[in-house]
Image (cartoon, rainbow, N blue to C red):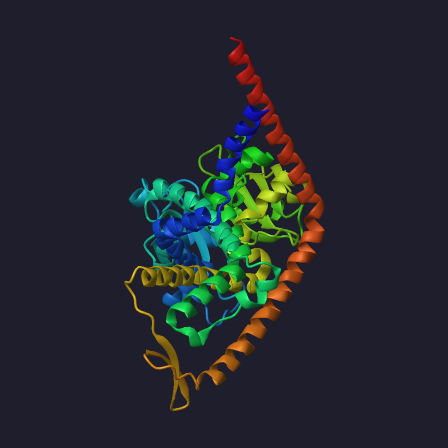
Length: 477
């Protein structure tokens, strides 16, 4: 009996030590010191990438059509204009339709010889859809907006950076989880823990902001960390939920033409017309041209029920020689696991929740940077590297300017904080509306989510059982 008790205590000691608050403080601190800079970098570049297209148009005004006039040119004429400018680029092209009347058609060439050995650096040809004029030809990664997105997705380190960003997503989830655990003050201390003590000095203000911003953004950051990891390692989710070839609207299928080549191939407009037959109300998003005699048209459409706007999953393959539909992929027939996979990209970018969601995602990325700076400031103060100072807001010419001084003059703070209170109220209403939208979507997709979770549990259970059998078999041998 004594031996069992001693053994039991020995087994419990590591668990008690693991759950010790001091241990989690160290985990949270070391993660911040080691990976905090990269978290902040991911936050800032992610915020900029939420509005990548808008940023690109802001920096390149020629990509914006101020006054659209007339009808759009046919896809065949658009493609002919691109091939006239790039006559020596053979193979498949993808035409991406703009999402507004003021945008350009972007024609993508996946592997140009100039950037062939880079992980992802296609040629982007911007074409005016009303005149078929080629406005710009640029390589991915050589514009400010795409360079920032590459920094966000791969740290400008190609495949190694891509995998590293996925690992950073897991570390961010651990950091957020430990931060929320360390913040929790108990039910009685919640209100006090939410206070911003602006009169207690710079360090206290930074610490209070660190806790409050971390709490408000924790759920979104965990979602971003989860989806970011799955975007870096899509095979993990594909294996667990049985959804292969689902990343960025891809199909995982190699469909080829079986018709005999002839002198009357089907044009882009005709292929689009054929593809619309199963989905007459769908929005055309992409058309991929055939490559070689066995190539086939791939038409990407978006149905109103699809949450993914940029990379929809409704796909129709049309034979270039016979004009027949070879295959159709309809998201409404997806399994629960496949439906779950379609949410990964739009949840990561915020587009799943509309313009409001994108803006909140933008603020969350900036908040991640503020978390790093405020946490680092607090740590440097504890180690004597930074001195604390009083925070003073001084009114000058009707404008309240923040300054740090040795005096405690804070009489000018009230008007500023009244304004902040109003801003907080409006932000609260926005978050409330987003929560309502999320609740509506959750109710609608609850059966799919439950079924997906059941499928995931069954797969995990099957994997564990098979592993135990293999271990038992090896032990028997």
